[in-house]
Image (cartoon, rainbow, N blue to C red; front, side):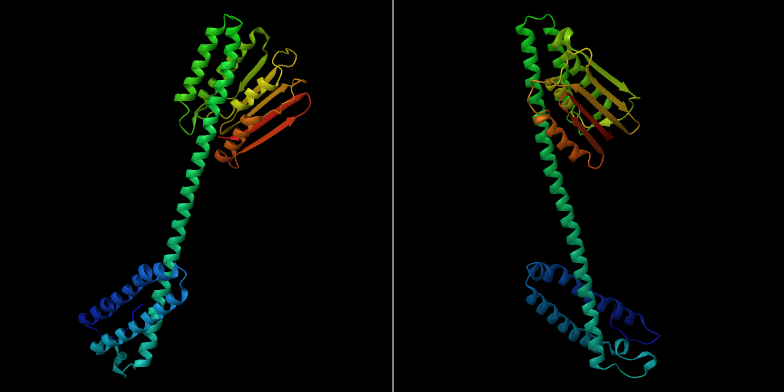
Amino acid sequence: MLIAHYNTHISNQGLLVIFVLFGLINIGLFYTNFLLFIPRYLNQKKYISYGLAVFGTILLIGFEKYGLALMFKKYTLIRENGHGVIGFASYYISAFFTSLFFILLSTVLKFTLDWFLNERIQRDLENQRLSAELAFLKSQINPHFLFNSLNSIYSLAYQRSETTPEAILKLSEIMRYMLYECNDNKVDLAKELQYLQNYIDLQKIRFGKKAYVDFEIKGVVGSQQIVPLLLIAFIENAFKHGVASNPVFPINICIDIKQAGLVFKIQNSKHHFNKDEAGGIGLNNVKRRLDLLYPQKYSLNINNTADIYTCELSLDL
């Protein structure tokens, strides 16, 4: 918006004055407010200083514009068709509101850009916080699992079991997966299922012929991916708190794979003498990871009775 009144037939010189000279003044006012007044006064909550700076600048710009208009009077102050001259008051009021428009425009733009910048910073900080929390949660998994597995192998070695070498081999395969293939945010579902199978095999070796586990995979395993080490906590708890030596009621694990998700269900009978709460660090960990990595994309139902523990997880991959 430029303050200019001119004849219908205007020369190139007139266009230069109106669209360049006055345009540069308005642009300068825009950036003075954008880069100087808002950061120095408004962002520092110096509202009176900001108002005085803006008001004073607008007043001075009005005189400056009128002075330039006098220099190029025939392009700016002569009314169209030459009928009269625009007076100082009319021109100054028009210049004042034009300057105010550019001040308001720069203020709106500055606050809009600052809002988007702050939103991006907040998102980056939140992502960093979540990444740090996930790294901490994941760091809890490996030592916890390794401690339990080493205890199992120690028991086998103490009993001089012939299955000790096989158990060590299974553990090495499991640890290779955990150390080298779980560094990405997601892994192939097929690899995660193989990891679960290796863990179950390791537990069967530990229990010898007294372990009864039904592990069933339904559906087609294709290119689906899953966050690693999510399901293992449920299976660990089944062996820790459940009864694996009952052929009538074995530990039952079923994974029903869909095109874009899966349903994981595990059920086990419970030791009557085991007073520990099923869950502990493992389930608290996996619940938190689900909240962070699959918000609004999972449902977890746990039914914990005196004799039976059932858990069902539905997950959108």
